[in-house]
Length: 258
Ligand code: ADP
Image (cartoon, rainbow, N blue to C red; front, top):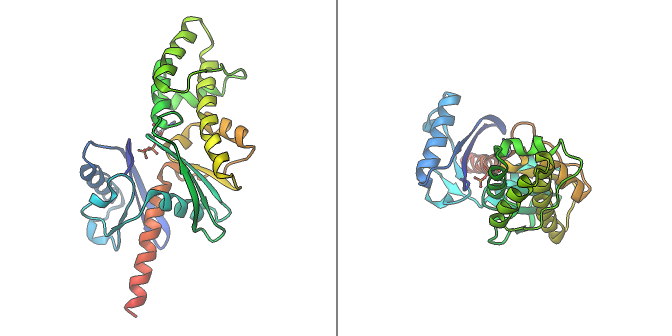
């Protein structure tokens, strides 16, 4: 359960059978039920077919059909390590927050840092700034790639940045340069948190913002690295980790019944 989207993953024998992402509803239980029902329908399954369900994210302890819940930090770590066991740093950029998570060589959680209450660096602030520029957030990244000369944006606060973007538009600045400026500012903000935690390769970006090609480019530049790619869908890594924890539980239960 995220602030903007709800995600679900169903696995069998550690293979992904299907996944689903829907916009989050005001009610966390409604979001969870809806995303789960849609995923089960897509896979031709019912709730009875699910051996174990783990919930994670906002309101994870409120989901009536979940058998247990685990923090999203652990779930992102678990999911990323499953994608590639060489991964040590996970940069999860979602709607309302971003987290930098480090895992040990055996995949166990090492340390993490997250943004303060400020929205700068989050997916929501990118959405607000994209709107000021007159484009959808999904277009911001591709537009930024057309620029070799990002505009320097001074204000870090999203509310002030909105106004600053309008001023650049009034001055007739190139929209691609403004898009690149927005993304560079956001990426540098996130990169500073990665440096505070102490970056360790290999790294992966997860969460919805990992779909922003411009963010990946400017983050790779700032951190002098090349991210591991997850072609399935990097937005589902937290839900994937939850499914993997559920699979571990099923194994444990099976062992105790031998
Ligand atoms: P949460 O888990 O907090 O609900 P998500 O991980 O789903 O958040 O990320 C939501 C953010 O992802 C949005 O605010 C937006 O910035 C970004 N996003 C989602 N889809 C895309 C896309 N196709 N292209 C670029 N950015 C995207």
